[in-house]
Image (cartoon, rainbow, N blue to C red; front, side):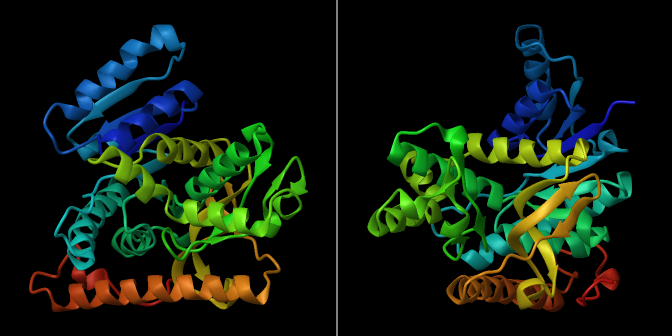
Length: 331
C-alpha cells in the first residue's frame, strides 16, 4: 500500500511542496485548503505535469479534511504572513488559532501521523500543535533548521565558488534572529570553513543566513520565500516515509537536552518513521550553548504569551477543546 502525505495550505509553500514530493515519488498526496476549488485546481495542474515529469503518484485537492484520513505525514503550511501594521502578538493570535484547529482535525483523521509544522512563528506553532493535537512528542516536528542550514550552504558555496553538494552546515536554535549557526560543524569537502574563509567573511555569511527570509521578502516586495522552504519540507517528509534515520536539524521538543526543558527548538535529530527518533546532544562550546539558551528563552517567552492569550479568552481562545489543554510537560 502506497504511503500518504497531506499538505494543509495551498499557497506557494504548500503547492511547491506537493510538486517536489510528487517528483520524489514517495507517496500519494492530498492538498487541502479552505478556499473553494483552489486545492483541487492546483492538484490537477500538478497531475497534468506527470507525463512530462515522469511521476506516477496520485495528487488530489480538497476543501474537506476527511480527504486526509490515514495520512502517514501531515504538513501544516496554513497561516497568515505578517502584514504592515500587524504586531507580533496579532500574528501569534491569528496563526495559533489556525494551527490549533488544523492540528485537532489532523489528530482526528490521522492519529498516527507525523506532523510537520511550517507556519510562523514556527517554534511556538509547534507547541500549539502539540497541545491541540494530543499527538506524541516525537510526532510533532518543526521545519526550520533544514531551511536555515541549506541557506548557509548556498552562501558558502557561492562565496568560495565550489559545488553546493560538497558543503555541509548545521544551524541550531530558533527560526529567526536567535538562530545559532555552528561553524565547527560547517565544512566544504570535509574541510572546516574556518580553514577556508576569514573571520569577517564567516560573520557576514552567518548574518546573511539569520536574515535569509527577510532578504527574500525585501526583494519580492510582496510575498516570501517558498522554493527553499518547500524543498526542505520534502527532505524531511522523505526521511520519515523511508525511515532513513537521517540526521537533520529540526525543531524538536526538548526534555532536558542541552539543559533545556519544555520548548521546541532547532537541534540535530535522527529522523525516521516515528518522527524524531532521537535528539543528538553535541558538545557545544560555552558561547554556542549560551546562544542556544538565549534562543530557548525567547521561544519560552512567546509560549507563555500564547498561554495567557488562551487563558484570558472568553471562548477558550485558539484551543478547540480548552478542557484538554493542560500546560504541563507531556509524558
